[in-house]
Length: 386
Image (cartoon, rainbow, N blue to C red):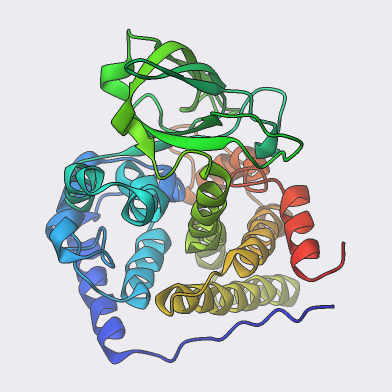
């Protein structure tokens, strides 16, 4: 069996100074944000807030300056991310673009694509969605059936994408689809494309809303019918889509949003229980806090690996799996500990409102970014267990 290693990076004085700067910014920008609004975490979207972050150089932090970046360390970026998430800041407008789409363009895109798109992302003025999942395929990305065929003026795309978060608001989508024969290799013959959503609307791309259990609209079905993509929409090399998308998922799975999505609930539970909490409650909360700290160390180590130029795909899968379990455990533990009926009605106590939000949201935690079963398969293969 192969050993899986995590190396926690040392505390950096500059990064900790940055932490104080971020906290002061949040105190100034979010005084009236309610606990329920903070519970939305990274799914809360506010374009104006994203632009303010861009003005401070907190988007695209590790990218080269010639593309609007700031050439700061992955650990600096990690500090900004965890402070934003812990505070429940509305970072959803730029989140996907900063977390994975921008790095993918930086690594695989043409110079023209980098110059055109990356500075806009870094300014907080450009949002992305991800065209991966499809009907009837679950988390089996290799089962994708959306296809792009070469034609005289570029590529003609047809297919359907499902659960596409933010597609109704995004400027671009990175589309994963088939461009060639697999020849027995389920991972072969795939490519990625940059789709300008505004241009594509009415020309073959239709975005249809999907409401979640709370009645909120952030998921979408994206139907693509004879959509003509220009030659320069291809991201990376034709046929390299699988390698590109798996590298992209490492960025998605390792971020602190994979264990801090229920942090607002833990905060409200501690506040409601108070210093005189019963022993049973104190033990349960202590367990959740200790697990959160352990996940933070693992997640920071992935940031350190990215900083060192290593491939942390396996470690990222483990962080996401353990993080999702912690988030769902937090909801169930708090629900059993506190005497509060979940309710988002006007006038509901903060704990009741946050609990109501997360009871309906938590089932999705172990689905987004790859289901628990898919992740455990990746981990088992990486460890030589299957």
